[in-house]
Amino acid sequence: MNDYIFLMRGNAGSTDESGTGWDGYLAKLRESGKFSGGSAIGSGLCVSKFGEATDITAYLSGYLKVRASSIEDAKKLLVGNPVFEAGGIIEIRELPRTG
Image (tube, rainbow, N blue to C red):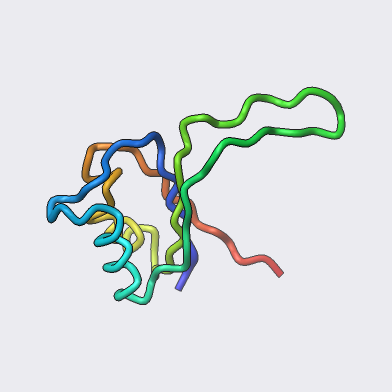
């Protein structure tokens, strides 16, 4: 099993087709045993030791961490995700193991 992160863009969607929204989707992920956490992403800043840094990436609204055997299997876990179901964009990134 590999670790993946879903980076959700924007605030598209608050309910899924069943009308349960995030609560129902997260309950489904927990029941699958593949959910490893997540959160909305609030405001912040970018810093650099060597001068000015760029602005934060304003379009990221939240993340979820999941475990799956492949990126295609991770993609299947998006069914019911309110952002995905509303047509929003979600980046799926593998979190490589280090050390």
